[in-house]
Image (cartoon, rainbow, N blue to C red; front, side):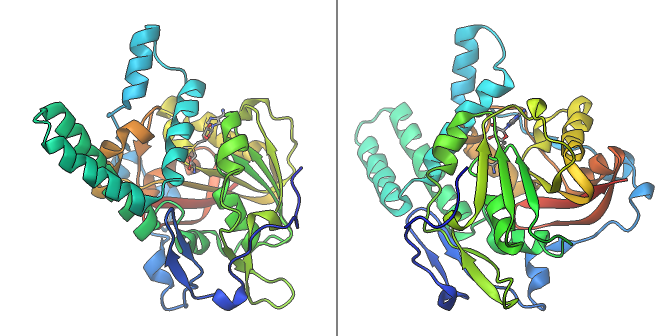
Amino acid sequence: MLTAHTEYPRPYSDQHIGHTEKLPSFRLDLRNYSAKEYNKFVSLNTVKDWSQLSWKDVGKPYEVKSESREKRDWERQHNRTMDAHTSWTFFNKAFHEWFIKDVPKESHNAKQNFLHSLRSFKPQEVKQALGSVIQMQLWNYVHRIQDGIWDPRGKRALFEGLDVKKPKILFLGAAEGYEAMQLGAMYPGAEIVMVDYDEYCKTTRFSEFPEGYPFLGSNPQTGQSKVYYKEDFTIEYVVDDIRNLKYGKEFDIVLSVGLLEHFPDEYKHEAADWHRRFLKPGGYCVLTTPRNQIRSRVYYRIMADVMNHTYRELMTVEQMGLYMYESGFNICRHGFIKVHNGIVCQPR
Ligand SMILES: C[S@@+](CC[C@H](N)C(=O)[O-])C[C@H]1O[C@@H](n2cnc3c(N)ncnc32)[C@H](O)[C@@H]1O
């Protein structure tokens, strides 16, 4: 069990609320949104009656077909399709390496390499060097400028309004655990259990998540905003397959981020059921998936070597909600933010 209050850097305090800044690897964002600005960050509740919605109305998700080179090489070498667990270990390693990049420095190096490659007159070298420049530019824009992956304001807008106090939160497929920590800041006193079957997520992605990253949440004493850090949260990180978990219906919130879209339709109900299995009566399932939009399709194509080791779909929030509705959930709240859809639902 990892608990609070070791001596770690706390570069930002409540005085920095409202502040945003681009650091070499990520954006820190302590900006709140006003009631008027709220709709800038989240588009909510487009569907009035889920029982009236059909697949004919909403169509099916877009399947991302480009695959990482590592996956193709592995499959050629092993003469079989890469299994899901192995795929995730490749994905987590590749993705983490991007989160820790010093982006300005590496962008500069990528540009220098490109200029150098021009002098080689080898088309393959030039193509590869140009590819690296484009990837760095895209990552800089998506993660560091737009903050589309963590998107704290958007996630807070999606996750607000849950009727819970000191919630027990279960994060299925937790990776670095970001969204559970954001929920922990919004609903103070949370007890968080993160589960991922890739040990690297516990030992590296979560462990190396920056201690100085400030999460904006609420102060239960004053009702005002308050800054939290990773070390403030009570977190247990379990390395196991979700299918092996022995918990009862004991969690107030069961969360997944980027899980549902990795299951073809015949397995979606099983994935939805994982959320229901551990939920207290009256509790909430909170899910996000990447949105189906042109710029996301472009992102997954250009970043294929980093992102595409497993089956992957991009969907709309209506498609996502319909999957959950058909799996026996009532949709309490649905919306989309910069690059994600979000659903808050409860078993019927
Ligand atoms: C797409 S990632 C989640 C997105 C995450 N926010 C990120 O930044 O990578 C899904 C995670 O679920 C984990 N996972 C998938 N299937 C699992 C299972 N059956 N049991 C436990 N973890 C699982 C993977 O190891 C992976 O870390």
